[in-house]
Image (cartoon, rainbow, N blue to C red):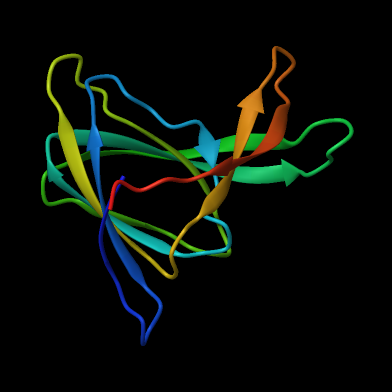
Length: 131
């Protein structure tokens, strides 16, 4: 994560991300923020997830939604009302670069670790930037 700009006046934040070959995120949210993402170079695969059940005691359940294969110049978004997705660089050899505009600076997000029974367990993940 490379923070490029944060607006003091409007609050939005622009971040560049560099993805190693095969690198992926777990299923995660954006801490209540919308996001617009564009692939600068390479390719990314974005999978949207629909929340079916949120229960910290018995596990969260999600249904896999649309999967988008994106190449340089393609964009997608994540609404605050549909806040769950995962992202990966499907290329086994090439690096990918993406640009993200967030509603506000993200200092943390919730990731959801899967178990063998199809449940996911929430875990707060602090986010770091290099700048």
